[in-house]
Image (tube, rainbow, N blue to C red):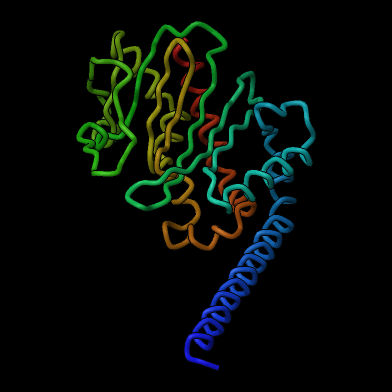
Length: 258
């Protein structure tokens, strides 16, 4: 057998070896995905049962159907598709929407969460309360999220603790908004959050958390977050207090601003 034939045989063996390796890797990945889906889907179902959350296009479906939809989205995300879920829940007269999504920034996967509720009554005291650091926000190359105030007029809050951390924008008499933010329950809930961007407008209330800071904090920070990557259902269970707190903030903001 000449050298050319040996080279072709060697090349064929390499190609076959690569093919086998790819098949084995895909099989292992599928097994890991199946394992996560089978253990975490029941936790997603329990989360929906406890909170009343349902996918926006499956509002009347039972929790088991919600878990199945989550599982479909999870499997797609492991194949490289964007992760984006939109769920809705009834909450003390409000329709609270929750959007959970991922995006790529500087080759890093960033989670974001947003909650909002349409205004069920006229809003006469609109305002936008945000972290003061957002005023100097500068986008690095590759970043896509931009921040803008809902209103042009910025006013002092008149509360040293809140003024130190937050900026307040409103088109109406600031004394009315100061009275809203001095409400004990609303003030406490806001200060318990590690990141706040709250808009209350005639359309409704919106709480944005573009880098998932509140959930990350309750999970134990960036290091703690890692252990929940393969436990997304458990992650929902642990972050349930965040959902309750922000739903209360939306309710409080809308109730006090009417």
